[in-house]
Image (cartoon, rainbow, N blue to C red; front, side):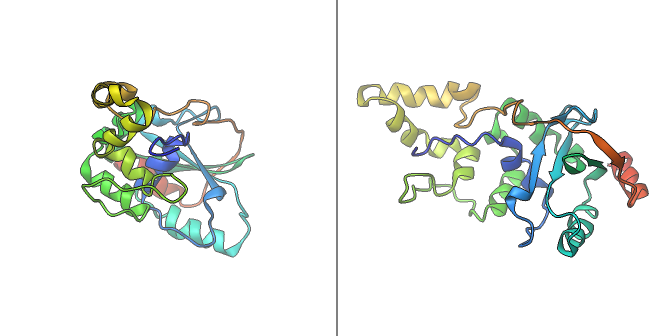
Length: 217
């Protein structure tokens, strides 16, 4: 696999960390999913709104405490719903329009440096200006660093993809044209980033707060 990264869940990898929701030992990475679009609400990334779905044990004390402290108090929270797939929370990225625009184009290396730092901090990756190596299993030690700073990895990817005689032309191709803007990770998949659900009830907890977040941001 080497430095080529094939994970398809783009928003969960790159946009979710920007919410700066603290990690919780009781909430596993499989307990939530993120989406850009849905059939059950008109709120979508086109309006800089981001969908976060929790699908875990909603009745547990740990989950309720986590939602109250880390989700309901998040400054970007704008709305929430109960659905047949879980609890759906809508966050605005009005303060990160440039990052969202670059995300939608697949130009992750063009994210503002401040947002890159937040993402790397979430993955416990120091913001270094040199390339990370590979693990013993031949996968990137810091895949998100590869995504955000592809310029440090063109040489390694070119060696992997192109024969020695085509190395330099291959590296130039990666710099200029890879995924349309010199990236090493492709754009999002609409299939992966679309939520099919049915809203069963509106979220009424702290509704005034949510409305203020939505209007006042």
